[in-house]
Length: 377
Image: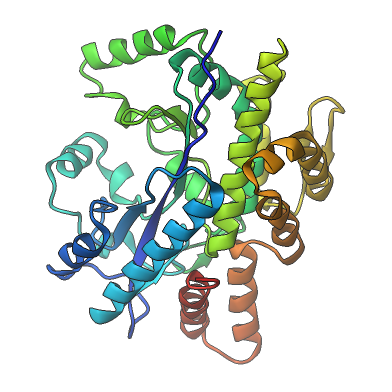
């Protein structure tokens, strides 16, 4: 029998650093920027591959509300330090018009190795995401829940989409980030494993072959964390609004508890093939919440709002347990008014209709994103 999981939660976000005047990504971060953040955030902030990015991570939190408060503090602090250096923080998975060729890599051995190994693939990785860790202390249980949680991943992507633009072009996708990310090796949906031991054997083969140093270089949409006793969800785009991020973290947390709860009763969620879930992953990448996803039991595409209500019914008991019913139901608001991807396209189109040039309209999108990043903080 498995030990009851701790169900602690932690959230990581990767912000883009924007020059206030040009609205473009900075190419080189001021030397004092990261030390200033580190002095205030005590180990909760790290550099990313490009100097135009910065990552934050909450403490290990015992509740959704604790995680929200800590994430709000992190956003607020990084934004304040950025402003002191003539920059702004932007929470979106792509920048509307920046060019990756002009960006500079962070001077760090790990990133130098990545660039050597992955070449042009990693050099165009001008994207940001959100990762949610949930404490699942038992290793075999962690793998078992990962196998079942695959089903939910496209739903989380659809609710989080924030990357419709790439290098000045409206790509027609709600999450172009996924298209960029798919070029990396060891990404996408994970394999299915019978046990944690089987997963370790898989990783050991990769390490012994000299392909990876450790499992941190396995970048699946969901994975057992290398550093923590957690199951880490990585498929989501970076949410522009804090409340949207908290909503998605709540859904993920409640879904994992639901899977554990039915497992205790000797039941389990049906395991669907990667082939089928990949199709929903594509629908979420392309349309976000607009088109719906395939209900495999019915064999048809079902409107996202309908899928959402079915999900609420499944995890309502768990949302009550975690005292996050309101945060869970916030997903209705996301579907009603759209994700960040919708706002970006609407802002661009409205500016163009009002006579703005293409460049001015794209800058208007950046201004909107900077403002909305601080919404509710």
